[in-house]
Length: 221
Image (cartoon, rainbow, N blue to C red; front, side):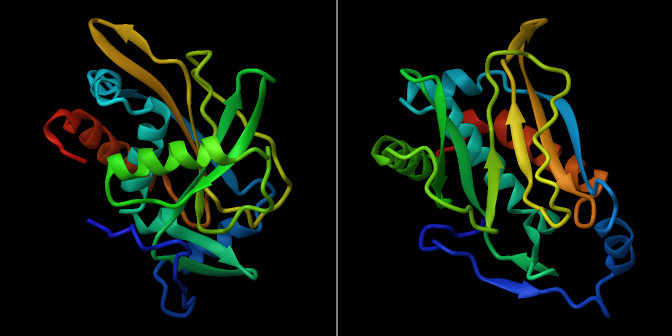
C-alpha cells in the first residue's frame, strides 16, 4: 500500500519519450480536437453506505478516499502534462465539490490523501468545515477532481470543457444510487485524457474499486 500521510505535494518524474512504450499512443492522442473522453458504468456498493454511516463517516468523503486509493495504484491515472511535457506523479491528492445547502452553491475543497479511510474522512470534514471561500485559487496538477451528482441516477454525464488539450486531470462523478434485485448500485463516471489512459486502465480501476468496496466490511481502513 502507498503511504500518503506526510505527502502534501507529490514528487514527480519526467517520462522519457525515447524509451516510453506508450510514446506513439501519447503522440497520436495529445493533439486531438477532443483528447479527453468519459466512461459511465455502475458500481455495486451494497453494504458500503451502511458500513460508513455506522462509523459516523461521510459517504461522499469515503467514496473520494476509495476512488483515490484505487486510482493511485494505477500509474496511468497519475500521469499529467507539466510545462507541456509528460510526467508521472508519485501520489495524487483530492479536490472535490461540496454543497452549501443554505446558499445552494458549491465550494471546491482540496484535501491531501491519507493512509487510512478514518484519517482521510476526519481531515476532509475538518477542511470542509473550516473553508469559507468557494474557491481558494488554482488547483494543483497532482489532484483528482470529484464532482458528485447525487440527485439523479444518470446513465451518462458530460462536463464543462475548458478547451485545454493538456488538461489530463481525471474527473470522477457519481449519481444517486438505487436498488435493483436487492443490490445497491451507484452510477459512476470517469473522464480521462487519452494520451495517458486507455479503456484497459479504466477497466483496471473499475475492478480495483469494486474489489475494495465489496471487501469494505472486512477492512479496518
